[in-house]
Image (cartoon, rainbow, N blue to C red; front, side, top):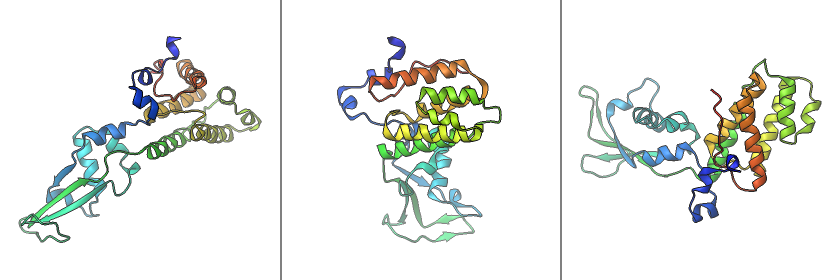
Length: 236
């Protein structure tokens, strides 16, 4: 049925379908970030010191690369590095700074040493986002609705837990285990985050559109294909 089609997967070329890559908005932003960016001295002025990630975040914000600016700490520390060049164009480890004129006798560049987050890294991001999201349940979380989600994902032991807090912690860990084992094979980081949000919307507020999306995604797991997108119902 068309309502259970994954449009993103269906539109992939044959090689992509064979590889089944993970996707995340962070990689899209990284592709738009310059490979080499000159850093002005005033960008380095800070009481607490300025690091590579601070410069990346500032540029990402100004360029409206929101996924990068908001998830900079998900990147490997060596993803970007400073490169220092003296006035003769040679790489060096030391430059002289004139405090009176705020000038340096050379240039500092921010260099992109890696160009994308590999699949393992995207999986780590997906897991982290699910864990964080499903830890944000409210006091209004309904025990019966939590049990319904548990039933949907074959986590019957959650019903034995009495408090909503314990139920949600067990549900969170169960969902994470399904994603890690690829029994719930979500390959898009943003979809995984929305999926976690739908669970919260249903257990907290009883949102029926959220439940419809959760159920649809669950049914799509029976197709034995990675999931990149679903025909979502609006939850706003």
